[in-house]
Amino acid sequence: MLRDPDLISIQEARSLLERARQAATELKEFTQEQVDRICANVVQAAVSGAEEFARLAVEESGFGRVESKTEKNLFASRDLWAYMRDLRTVGVVRADEANRVYDIAEPYGVIAAICPVTNPTSTAIFKILCAIKTRNAVVLSPHPRARRCIGAVADRLGRVARESGAPAGAVGCLQNVTLEGTQELMRHRLTDLILATGGSGLVRAAYSAGKPAYGVGPGNVPAFIERTADIRQAVRCIVESQTFDYGTICSSEQSLVCEDDIAEQVLAELRAQKAWILSPDEVALLTPVAIKNHVMNPEVVGLAPVRIARLAGFEVPEDTTILVAPTAGVGPDFPLSREILAPILSFFTAPDWKKACDLCIDILKLGGLGHTLVIHSNDESIIWEFAFKKPAMRILVNSPSSQGGVGYSTNLVPSMTLGCGSFGGNITADNIGPLNLINLKRLAFVQPEFARRLSGGAPVPSAASGSSTPTAPPRSESGSAPTGAILPRFEAGGALPVFRRGHFEIPQRRKP
Image (tube, rainbow, N blue to C red; front, side, top):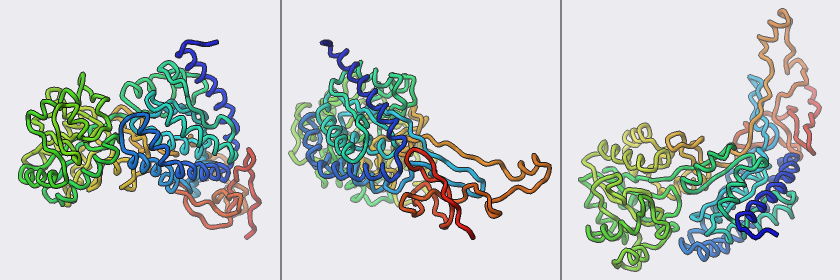
């Protein structure tokens, strides 16, 4: 009998992967209607359990807000489903009739999904739904401080998926979590793709596991308030973002930059919205508590401002929304200019928007390259200058950053995993979603001109002349043409193949 926790975890990872491999083999034969039916039931279970999962997460991790985590769970289920309900992820998902090129979706197979402690249950819900939608099996590896709440999500959603027709093993979760078990999960021959959400060390491990991997970088997000902005509304956005689960989303603002001539107005509005502007002595007390060994102290992550202040040795009112720390510069000599996933903002001023632009770039370079930047402005020309010049993959305008980056208050793809592109050392800059979890095969017909040359100039049969080759999108089992975000609408009457019962069926073409 195994007694070593590391060996137990490794063996559990292997067993879960073996079950997931069998499930993935079966899922590959499912139709679009089958996976959508399973997803719809899983979404319903996630929505009904959203508050319960949130309470479990707060109780286990010791930080965050139940109401915010409930909202995140709903976002990762209800809102994600609204986005992906009509996405085609089975069979022909895109058809270019003019050039006779067709994209056919193929699942990866088995996904190793690493989930963080900051957004544990919402990330687990998100990854389970994206995997099922794309006919992949998924094995979750929870952060040790969120093992129970993530396990509860996997157990319930996995059970609902099985009851709805998914094979056993389609959703798995490590219960005995160790570093060695997680490494085995990522490196094992049965793992086809790694979806890693967590700290930089974890992401580096995912990229070095020898598997295709989506990892995401840290976010040291600057928010710039430009002089044409509605200052009251801009500050309201920032306060809303910082109080949303106490800043635990990686796209939350970390620094606030404004121009010199509106600085007093911004500070006055911050005070009016119950932010606490720290004195130099309070900044000195807060710094070693918030930052340890040049990185954020995990003991302050997701705590209320009043609790953080007490840890630092000073008092603030109970209803304080943000701790605002005036900061003289950016870099190692100014620790509070780093990322801290808590309601703490460094505060900077600049003489004009161009200097502010440079300052925002410096902040991004200090651990936030490629992630997110926010600009509050009503000057379109300046907004576009920021969009073109900033090394950030999400430029949010007049929005709370926590909610905007993940696609809640914007129309970005709803996601709990945000890529940072090559700036942040990531393979993608996407808000990662279901379309990142499929391979696309291409069916490409010979060009007519090339075919004529090969045949010595003889005419080439066309679809209009009675060819039996496909010329319209696949039909669903109900007989209606599918409509999805990546499959254009076509006129009825075509006959592309339908994926049904493990193979493609080609319907008879209608006669003219």
